[in-house]
Image (tube, rainbow, N blue to C red):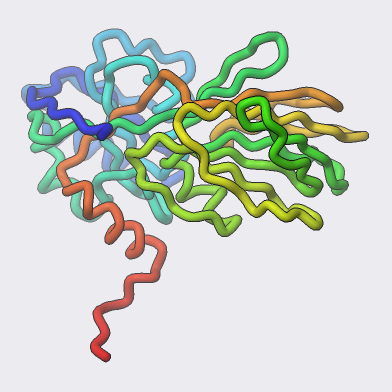
Length: 283
């Protein structure tokens, strides 16, 4: 599920790099210099991406961490352009290649030797019918004041709980390795289409979180005497006031990632990046 073979050469490649990572621009230049023959490259800093015209781009290469991938995903979501991630960050759960091994492998991806693995996004509909999409997570949380808020949570029109604490985060399977993981939530299969709903620092709550099916519709309504923030994927903030609501569901948008590794390798890579894969022990 979520996997499609696409074996053809990519000709028009956009390289997006994070210049706050010391070696990202160096790697971008290396790709330009080593593979300039036979490909049309463009290069851009991730923070200039919003106003960039994709035009005839048929592959995006990101050089940075998961944040760089998230910005690229927001730009290309709804299109057929896949992403190839080269990790120069700390963990890089979504990246396919690491900065120390990309040179011997990257041309195979350019030449169409990889499949496309699709990841589901979440959709958030807020006041004024404004609709936003998230690859990782949608978080409704308290604002700048250190005071608890209440969030009424409904699933398909049925009241689940009113959480009193710092907020609630709704995560996609991809986002289950992000914020929700730090809250103690499980990791979902990345190609599944479930939604993970987890309260943040709740007081006296009997519900620690739920895993919801693909047809679930979530409504979060905030009650606060101060302010609250709706955050999309860690870098988009929308101010929310008392009794404001957001509706969350699986989006009709997906993001494609180039993969050569077996889907089963995901779990080994995950445990390695989390530092919990120390070796094999005999009892």
